[in-house]
Amino acid sequence: MVMINMKKYKISLKDMNLNFFHFTWKSNLTNIEEKGLLPKKGHHAKYIEKTKKVFFVEGLDNLLILFDY
Image (cartoon, rainbow, N blue to C red; front, side, top):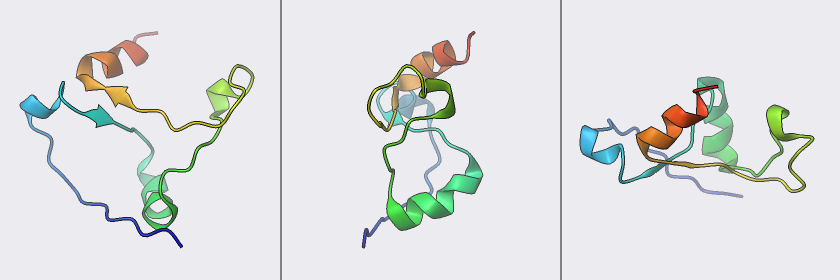
């Protein structure tokens, strides 16, 4: 059994470039609270990734780069 202590946290501007973030659908939160972040091959990576992973983004600038396609 995995015990997860998730807290809601309001992000301030100083947090944006000093932390790592994992973005997911709101509908996944219950599962993450129960089981934690489980490594998987995402839909967009299933043909290019060899192993399962959990992805994080360092800072807001890197997040914006991901969505700039």
